[in-house]
Image 1 (cartoon, rainbow over the protein chains, first blue to last red):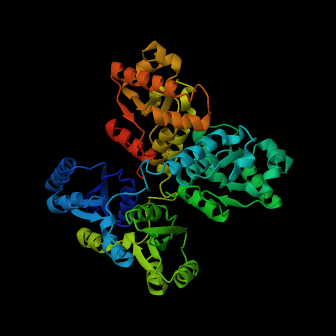
Image 2 (image 1 turned 60 degrees about the horizontal axis):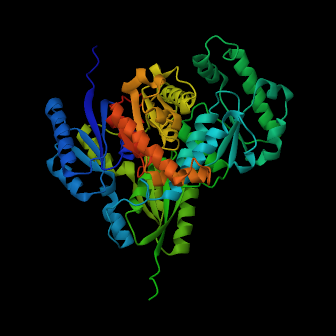
Image 3 (image 1 turned 135 degrees about the horizontal axis):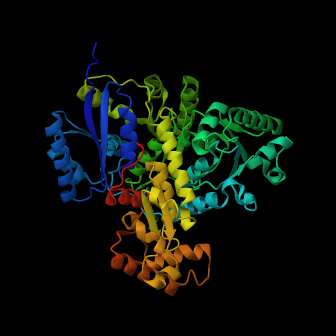
Length: 280
Length: 280
């Protein structure tokens, strides 16, 4: 029996800013509709009537081609631009800001300014600086290159090579302004069956990462195929040793195998009770 | 005349996942209400009735303290959890998914599965790998440490020290899976008034960053106060030289002074017509 042809829809993310949030949220929503194949286009920085008119033309052209209404997720602060796309666009326009404007205005008893505040852009210099400082901290204290700044760290991630320490450190910096260092536990460290000396004064800041050996093997193989490093029994050995070290030393740890970088970072923030240095 | 006391409201971001998107979007909305002072709390991973009950209790306690309804932005995939918070919580519950469920189901002619697809988590291994690979590329090709991988780069950011190259490279990797290298144009490079030899074969991949001299001076001063590097005339000199080089060599460039990392990255993606390697 031939498979029924999948419905296809074009989805646009439209914004007078970057449109990254509209995209993330809209994309999450669409993954909940199984029977449809979507293609996605983000149209950022539509901040004039001219740019919006061009975008509308592009969206309407898709409608004419597909014969199906495109889905348009938007985050438009400027209500005139929202009115324009609502009026001229043949797609289904769903604006995340507009959805809650009325209940928020009613509850707060004031009108929205329709001018974006400090959440993006350079309005908040302190926030920007905190973010860059955190990123520099993560880069300068990556992979155990130096341990002399550990007293200034908010958290020190430890784990075997390729268990997710570096991406997590960088995301914690970019998203939350956290000063995260990370230190790789090598085979030699693990053979000692005790915390490396340099880490001992910072026990309270340590957070362990672990990962299923199969997955570790898969990741290491992409990096160095057929090496001892990527060998299945080597991965098993290191993971066993690191988890037993965490338990013995009473170090909090997290298995990252089935988690995204966002999920790992959020879990660490929550579990370790870290105070973020900026608001997203 | 004494200033009227500002209205204060507590805002919660509630999710059965990380809640990062709810927070970003909700925070953007709240910055549009000028007369109110908000405090923000994110409650992630509320994925059972028990966890939700605890969260509701916490939110309701704020209501009892403040005498004002808390604002609750949520992204709950699980409708039972959404029903629970709607029923038990004394705050104003605004769910971003729920807002558009009905029009989307009507337009697509199918029901939402209320199960999150590939947008986060490890459902999409290829996407995860692409992201980590891009991050490794950015780290290994940061700050001109090596130039031998430039043929594999999607883009090569150039600019004077502290013009935003590294954060942008990392964000391009994490958010879009772009392979971005970056190369610092030093004073010596700028004195030659021509592109450094190593960059010449990759002219099409070059993207220049620039920044207002005052702002550059401010950033450099935080790093090395009272240094020649952070000197006002030195910053002016370097910026003049780099912009004149961009113009002479016909290199696209962007002034990052008033832009967030998200805005810089989105602009580069758009201007350079880069094809992203992953969907957020």
